[in-house]
Amino acid sequence: MLRLIFLGPPGAGKGTQAERLSAIYRTPKISTGDLLRAEVKAQTPLGQQAKVYMDAGELVPDEVLIGMVKSRLQQLPEQGWILDGFPRTLAQAEALEELLRELGQDYDHVLNLEVPDEVVVARLLARGKEQGRSDDADEAVILKRLQVYRQQTAPLIDFYEAKGRLRRINGNQPMEVVQQHLQTLLEGCRRTA
Ligand code: AMP
Image: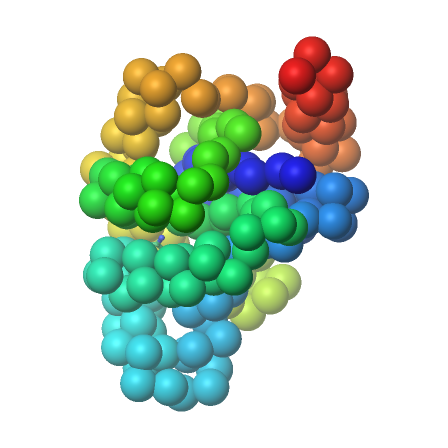
């Protein structure tokens, strides 16, 4: 059973790699961005609240995200999980530690996909054109998301490094190569486990 956390700036390839590993290892993926976009699409009260933050490139409040992830992790005791896009703040990371303690669960690795800023901006602009994601179409919103990432999410690298759980992966490579590195890392760890 696998329990993984993906870290990295927007456009680092977290969603793509989480999706691929989810299929290969038959492990459910929990993507908070996808969950929020589904709420926005369904025009639920939560979706309407979240949209304002998402369109501005800001983070949706911690309580909302922590509640969303909590209810899902409680349902997945046996299958494991792959978190994509959560945690994104220290408060979320600490809430996750506490929740996992309560549930008697632990994660195997925190996978940090490293990609330079200029590559991320180019990737997000391309994705905005292809997928019509409104928060990817506007360069000002992209730059805001990168700024929010640096201020609020990048400190998680030190948080997990201090726990000895961080694995750094060069995300500035073709997706097949990144995927291969991830599989090698996961299978290497399983063999020695
Ligand atoms: P993503 O698809 O992961 O890039 O997420 C899209 C947007 O959803 C982000 O720019 C945030 O506004 C919001 N979001 C997703 N995950 C989180 C999170 N863990 N905490 C706060 N906001 C989030």
